[in-house]
Each structure stands twice: as structure tokens, then as C-alpha cells.
Image (spheres, helix red, strand yellow):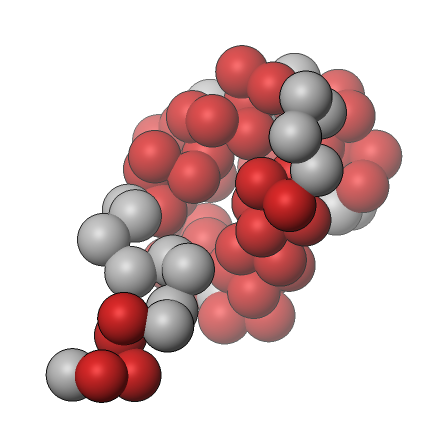
Length: 75
């Protein structure tokens, strides 16, 4: 349980991560930073969630991008 206290993603859902990134960066910038089809062709939260839940490497990239954006206030 102590390890979760130090996990910056603890309590943050993948849907919340996506929504925040889309609001902050937009789909086109997300697709430029992480070149995956669900960001570049007819992007939606629903299709992205389906893909990211099945694809650990892509989910890791999205989580890393989220953490990077959170570490830079005002970005």
C-alpha cells in the first residue's frame, strides 16, 4: 500500500488522463508526440481507451506524457 502513495498515477483513471491531455494538447499534438492511429485518425476518447487498455506499450507512453505535462506547470 505504501508504494501507491508514491505513485503519481494512483487514483487517476486512464479516461481522466486522456481527457486532460486532449484538453491541454489537443488530438493533433498528441498524435504527433505519440504516433498511434487512434490519435491521428478519427480520434475519440472511446476508441483511444479501447486501444490503450489492450496495448501496454502505448498506455505507458500516454502515462509518461501525462506525467511530463504535470511536471511542467502552465503547459
